Structures are given as structure tokens and as C-alpha cells.
Image (cartoon, rainbow, N blue to C red; front, top):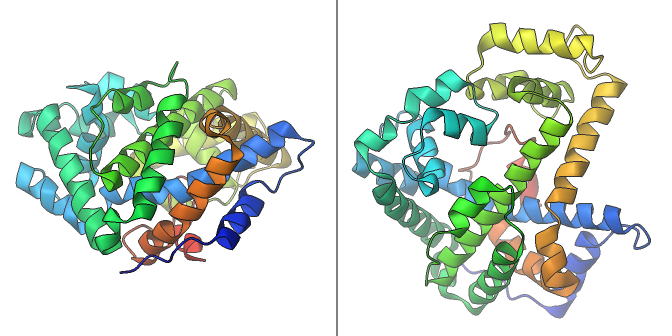
Length: 318
């Protein structure tokens, strides 16, 4: 599969899309940048949870692959070492504690964190090679990996435990794996900041999902994957009714829409530092380099049509 060459005009278009906010509104500009870069980077990271190659590698380790959850928790928690359920629940935030405890620490009895890390890289490598073909070794890939690494390692990791744990790992030599590592660090950097924004809004883990579902980001059924169950979901909804964030039918009120918008704004603000560090030209160049790769991954059909992030992957094909 051949990735198109990136022309100067395409770089210019990426620059105009990513830097489309009012330049007199610096904060607005940076949040727009952070959100757009999240959209092009997230599919690169997320393929590890859905690609057939990832399930094959997980099965070889001894993990059950009838659902994605055993490998999901292993892949994502492995940079922390043999993390227990309390630590993992705290850092993953949106999952019900019982669901986390169903998998952690049990996954470490099947494979050690060090073995999982090796397997995780193998899964990402095989997935990227199949999806992107020979162009994993292209000049465009090498350039994208270099820029993404600057963004990933340049940002402050203070208060970002999952991002820091991934940044602590030795850097891969191959460009496509370096890009995947950078995408993972930047994804967790944003996620760590998102938890801070949710805490500032006084939204507990289940409330964070109920309030997002209430805005229409995805059907409530999509969020059932986080393991809260109908009883605790309804209890969280009633707490939000009392705060006037949602009505009794679970639909967001104006207060709820405003509250969620503020959470997303704060998340974007907290995720903006990597792009401020590398500057607008490098950010636009990276966006232009990544866009064809993101479209290929989105078009592959391995990612879900709807997610608990409120992101529609098929929309990224456009």
C-alpha cells in the first residue's frame, strides 16, 4: 500500500486546518491544535487494542482473546510494572474497580510485565507493517517519527504517570515503532490531563461516562464496556440530575453541555504543551505526514465505529 508523497500545498492545507483558530485568541488556538493532533494520533496508538496481529501475539503469551480486555489491561498497564488493581483503577479512571480486578493482577500470572512489553512492541510492529506496508520504512515515516519524538519527550511529565511510565522505556530504533511509542506517550499525556480536568469538574469515574453519554457523544450501550452495570450507572445519573447536569431521561441539560465543554476545553489546554514546544511549522508538518496513515488505519475497519472517547474513527477517513 503506497502512501502519497506530501506536497507543499498539502502541508499548507494541514497548517490552515490545525491552526484555524483566531490568532488573537492564543488559548483557543492551542486547544484547537491539541484536539486536532489527538484525532490524527489516536488511531495509531489504538490499533494495538483491535488489530488481529495484536490478538495473535496476545494468544501466544497465553492471554484469552475471546474479548479484548485481558490483553488491553496487560498492554496498557505493563509500563507500570506489576501494577495492582488499585493503582490501575486509579490511573485508568473510567473503569469500574471490579472490572479492573477481574484482570489485574491476574494478567501478571500469565506473563510478566517485561514479557508483555516485548510482546506489545511485536504486536504494534506487525499491525503497522500490515496496514502501512513497505512505507513503514519510508522517508515520510522517518520524518514523522522524529517530529513526534520531539513532541513526546519535550513535554513536561509532571503529574502524568501513564505518560511518564511509557516515556521511561528505551526508545525503539525503527522509525515506525518510534512513531507508535511517541503516539502512545502523547495519548497517555492527554489522558492523564483529562483525569485532572474531570477531577476539577468534580466528576467521579462513572459520572464522567454518564455525563459524556448524555451529550450524545455515543450511545449509553457503548459505555457499558467499562463495567459499571445498570445500578451504578443509574445512581451516577441521579447524582447528575441533582446537579442539574442531566434530566431524568439521562439527556444533558444546558448546564451539562457547558460542563462537558469546559472539561474538554481544559483537557485540550493541558494537552497543548507538546505542540507549543515543537512550534507551529513542525506541528503542521507532522499533521500532514500523519494524515494519510490515519486514513489508512481508519479505513481498515479494525477500529470501532463508536468509542467511549466520543471519537468516530470512520469520520477520520474523510
